[in-house]
Length: 261
Length: 261
Image (spheres, one colour):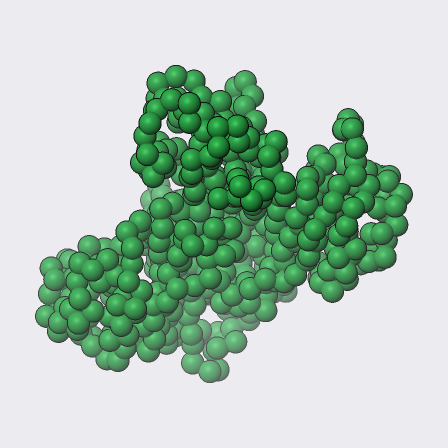
């Protein structure tokens, strides 16, 4: 039995999230269904992160076991020929037998995009949250920066969650303007803002709740210093509303060195 | 009667092109239909370029006349509230009474995108032509560069066209790799190539026929020097197949100084 590690990119717009559910189009189900005729039997695919409905991925990592001896590059071509265009296998590799995309993951990185301006360029409409009001990028960036380190993120957890601990470690938490000139000949009319966050793990809706709060800081509804106070309060009611799913992308997943390839 | 100049961005995927046609979803028809209830009567919208089915725009320019005295920024908001998400008014201005987006246009710029690598990242799948084979960017760039100047572009005109002259002037003709790191955490697996062309005007399918030929040069099916020979031959049969419409974007339209705003 071989263990295969794939890196998947998908457009979450038309998916009810990663995880297989009855009567819903999910990424896991679409990938498992593409593998079944190759393996001539059911295959279970384990994803590093169970992205929510509408959330995208550029570098989701998944593992599965195969008896078929097909070469990795041929398997990648076969899967991409079968899969719909909104899911792509962008990387593939043989992995150690006990490698598990979910339990071996050490760090995940998410990107959250905001399209700031009067109108969203159509190619960004599925991938960026539209905020028409002016955003103070410096204020939002300074609020973002204070999240690095080990903290109790209970204030940014979806209500009704039940996890053992709400303590997580964040290595990178950075908000910045990125080049919008690829999308518009009138770039002064459009600002593209990216929030990038890397951590050991994330609570349910945590990145979207942080993004919503950063957007409130940027729009002057909160001060940058409020971010630290919200974090300390451990009170979900003090953070802002959850930002919409379509701005969020699971960017990459990191593994310890022997599994990193 | 006021003359209004709008800059439009659209995703051409679900349009049968710019120009109104019976029983087809076209950009002109969608914009005219959004204006009618505001004007309380039919409005004719004139576009600078009549983009083909599947071709996108980031800065199409269009003009129309209005009796309604609504302020430009309110009109922009009203149109964007009515229009579907795949068409956006990204700029709006009052124009001189006789200003005509089509006849006053002096230069147009098109961008053609190629996604080069094993798999197209899903957010690019509607906006870039996928070429999996290796592309020699230097060879393609050198073929692109020899198109600047005044030439007879008959070899790159759609067969069956009937125009007075096939002579056009090209000011910019540049092919280059652009930053793919916004779309993929594994950028070595993806190269994004952009061909940029600015000219006084373009023959039917001219940019797509040039892009197809540049792609053949990049894949080694032709030599860079063949570009000049094809141009001189004035023979459509010597150029490559027309590149697909979804890689093409009408980027911007320029007007003489008094109308340039």
